[in-house]
Amino acid sequence: MDPEVANFGVVMIIIVVVVAALAAITVRFIRNIKPQPLKELPSPLYDQRLDQLQQSVDAIAVEVERIAEAQRFSAKLLAERETPALPR
Image (cartoon, rainbow, N blue to C red; front, side, top):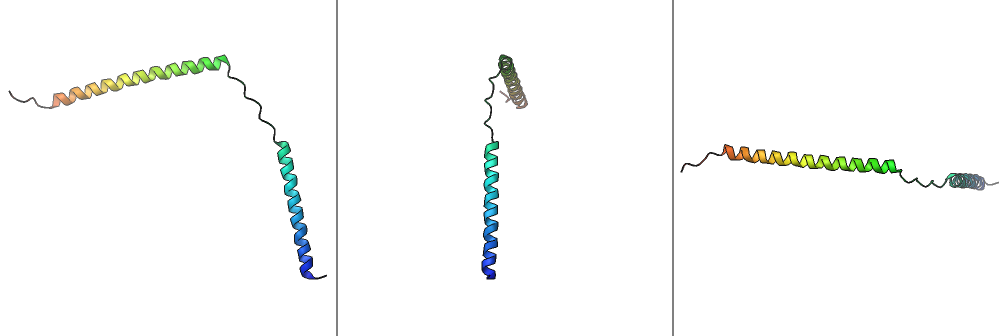
C-alpha cells in the first residue's frame, strides 16, 4: 500500500473519532442541561424589610441634605464675615 494513502487513512480515522467524541460530548451536555426552576415570589416579610430599608434610606437622605444646607449657610456666614466692611 502506498504510504500516502496509509497516512490519509490514519488522518481520516482520527478525524472521524474526534468528530464522534465531540458529538457524544455535545449530546451528553445537552441532556444534562436542566431547565431552571421558577423563582419563588418574595415573601411578605421580604417586602416589609425592603420597605423599611427604603424608608431608612429616605430619612438618611433628608438628614444629609439638612447637614449640607447647614454647611452652606455656615460657609456663607464665614465668607461674609471675613470681608472687611467699607468705611462710610
